Length: 393
Image (cartoon, rainbow, N blue to C red):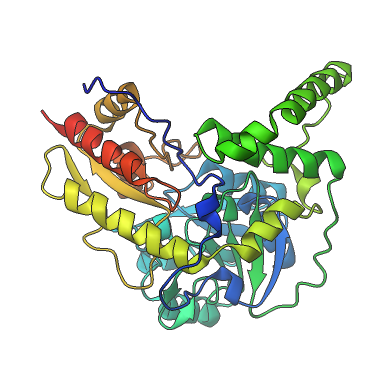
């Protein structure tokens, strides 16, 4: 393995001065363009709210893709409904024939996921399929904040759509519930309080500082941050055991679903960043980084990119790579200091190769490499070199 100094590469966007630059190209479309929206604390909370708004309850069934984040299922169970896993094809497109075979009178909602920022092809066909059978369509844009498909922004095909803004922006928490078809005024949200607001803003700054960004701000805030740390330690020591945390579990990479956050609004910091960020710059940077990684890895031994090309209108969340031996590759990359984006490595109990062999294979073999907009040139080049070394026989 390479012995040079290992940079601290952020696995997701971190706050920097570059975060406020504008893009140079034409304005891109996103979930923010769909219609009414609510700023919530995570994508999974948005799923729970969407299912509630769609009237999902005990005895209902919700069709979910067999390859999924485990965080997708608890909101379904919270509504008292049963998740039913449907098959995917090797390119992650939905298998409508399999979905049709799983329908019964209890089927209430179909969840369709846009994986890694690649919008599902044929959303008009999926929309017509749902309309003809009287079932709701929930568009999962957790990986796909930015993009369009068949002339519409992602999220506009579903009755409701959800997004995870913290996958695309330098924020510590954040999700979106949107709908072009229904009124969201019934979804009432309130602040989670000053402690939550303070923690989110400072956590976003700390993450930036940890990866060598915003050095001047770090120096200026050194003493206040030390005082904050002391205050947090004192507060934590005095809190009774079992007291809920100040931020959602989703901010700490947990798959849990906590209904107490259903009526909480996303932080002021996250809302401002979501409104002010240049989505055009984000899309341009992510696409350029994706193309760089794709050019370096195409034809390498040890695996292949999940997709043959980056389609127009797509803004990747990460670069999905199908490894021949994912465990060995992941071990080599982590030893070298390369961050690896995980998705669907652990599936919900009961979802195995018997339900969908393709999904089980994807869960074992797909690794994601960061391609976000806050990667510096030297970090991207270093990471590409280390991936190439790790893939070598």
